[in-house]
Length: 137
Image (cartoon, rainbow, N blue to C red; front, side):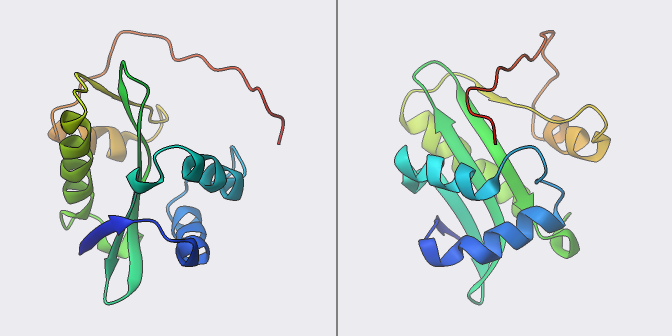
């Protein structure tokens, strides 16, 4: 897998990957892409193999904490180290800007993904995740 920044020509493949990975349904993914492209677009990572998008990871940093969003690997390729490779690249990027801690959110029912992140050294923080919609979609 080659990891590179997202390109506008990736949009359809990325949307299909997110749909297949269960990462849609909460927000408009096209709007999410547009929002990311306004802030550190080079941190919207795409994994490809033979010209086919097989993985994504959106990396964020606001000066206090790093964030991982929409880490996705094609379902047929999960368990082969691709997610781990994307996370390693994400950590490299965040360390490079002085980030001290990475946060991410996983639905409590997604035990397989929680176990994946625990294997990478993440722990469940004793916090309540809260959100407030500023834009109704």
